[in-house]
Image (tube, rainbow, N blue to C red; front, side, top):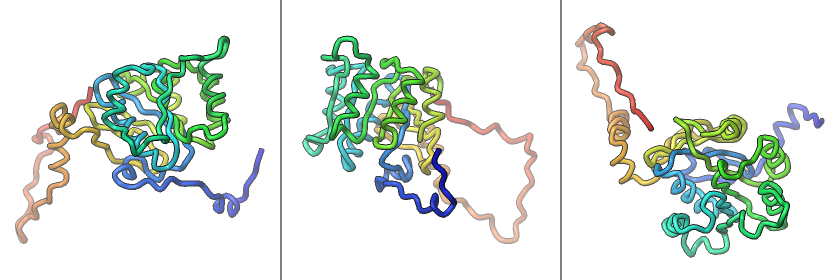
Length: 250
């Protein structure tokens, strides 16, 4: 047990990444070490969003993409080709965790050994949580040993508007952020560091799949007309108003 007084705790220093726009409004003032989860259904831009984030994080350290789901597959290569270029050479690693794994060593043990090595990556994307078969106890062990030194992002499939599995829900509750990707828009469901704004992953595709989102955004940003001076506002019976249209996200 470690006890700090108010003054001592207020003087405690944390290493912050210095996130800049447009990521700042989505991620907030992100520290160098954190745990978070990003989830969505297939074909909605989840991998694309994570690749864009991974490319940005190379500005702050080395990034590893642990591809439990796709291995060194062609579909993953296409995503890398779209988002990672020669500027990221030496800063971005694509790893197939199930290739050449020592006999009798679990996926969790292998990951722990990898992250414990000197000069191991500063940021790790685990793609995907559903394929690792990690337990909650293993997550807590990972957090205790590496969560104060590294940024660890779990990628997960979605059920409705939340993570597909119970452990995914627990990680969202416990971690720094939970981000839901749908129709090429990333929605901030939770962020401990001040991130609140949606992030448009691929605007042309997002406009095709979700035009109502952009219509509502344009309306909310439009300047409001002022009523002429001296004219009284007409009272409106609330029961006569049409119900507000709300966006439906699959």
